[in-house]
Image 1: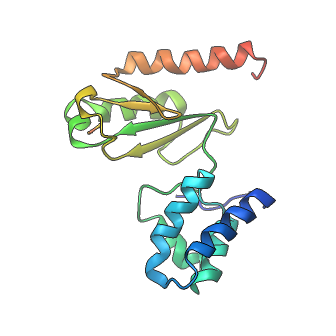
Image 2: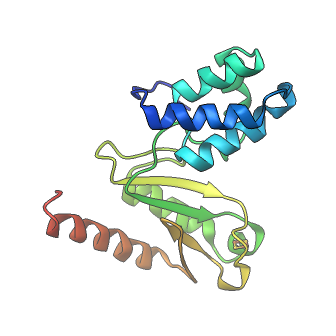
Length: 171
Ligand code: FES
C-alpha cells in the first residue's frame, strides 16, 4: 500500500490531534492502535501529519507506525472520496457473494480497497461484519446501508452518483 501523501496540515487536524493526545497523556506504546482508531474516526483517515504526531507522542518512528498500521485492513491513508463505498466481507455477506461485489466495485471504480479516485469522488473500503447480516450482502455508501446488493445494483448506484455530480456541475 502506498503511504505517500501530500496532505497539508490544517488547524482542524492539529486540534483533533492535540485533543486525542491529551486523552492518551501517559499512555505507552500499547495505545498505538486505539490512538490511530480515534484519529481515523475523527479525520476519516491517517494523514502523514497524524502519523508523525502519534510517533512523537509514543516515541515511535513513522516507519514503525506505518508498519503496524498497514498490517490492519481498517486503516486508511488517504482522505475518503465524496462517495465512500464500504463492502462487508463478514461471513454472512461472504456466503451471499460479497467477493463478487468487491470485484465489481474494483472494476467499476478502478480502485483497490483503501484507495480514493484521483478526482476524490470515490473511495473503496473492505470491512468486517457491519452488523446487518440479515440484509446480506451489504454495501454502505457514506454510512447508508444497501441490502441484498447485486453487481447490477452497484453499477446503478455508481451511475446515480455520477449523474448527480454532472447535474451539480462537478463533472
Ligand atoms: S456479515 Fe455482512 S453484515 Fe454481517
